[in-house]
Amino acid sequence: MAETVPVWSDRHPEKAALRQAVWANLKTHRVTHRDPVGHIPHVIGAEQAAARLATLPIWQTASVVKCNPDSPQAPVRLRALQDGKVLYMAVPRLTEPQCFVELEGDRLRAQGIALDHAATMTGALQVGRRVGFEEMAAIALVVVGCVAVSTQGSRLGKGAGFADLELAMLCEAELIQADTPIVTTVHPLQIVADDRLPTQPHDWPLDWIITASEARAICPTRSRPTGLDWAAIQPDQWQTIPILRSLAPEP
Image (tube, rainbow, N blue to C red; front, top):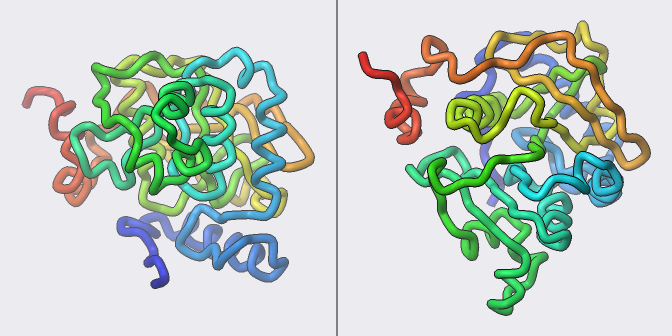
């Protein structure tokens, strides 16, 4: 059964138009493993991009990695487990109070669980330990999925806003810091000119863009958010993301 386009998408017309243009271009050039529309594109070269990321000092020195649950970043999650890192993956759509899954390669091996299974979204949800912020270790590296990225480090997701919410919540919980590297692995066709990708105050910029052939360090021209923008939280987000309600400041 085909997956549907996620809820909360296309709230910003210019971002929506760019998202559709990138999806269409990827389809035209046949560089994805499946139809990219509605998804973080599962691009050809994702495994090579993950391998390139693993050569960087920011990866090699990071003992704790947070990674998105989408298919193109499965090779990143697998490499984190193989390299002995603690891996955190968000529960899709943040629908549970314990909204992250914790995975450790050594523990999984001891239980006879194949790491390539644990690195998939389905596998991680099956074998990982559900944790809340109070149980999590400080994160040394963040990997996010993108539909498009700009040459200056702006990013565009599927439109639901989960990545920015996750980062803002982790910042509120002091699990990521102002200098925690934020990276993505993408296909070169996902990289667009900076003036094509509009930004908003809640958008988190990237520090690195990794493709199969290049690791590009970015000096973001915008500062990061310092936490959650409570005024920007949508009514449907309040209703379906329980951790938001628990983090909300007293009225």
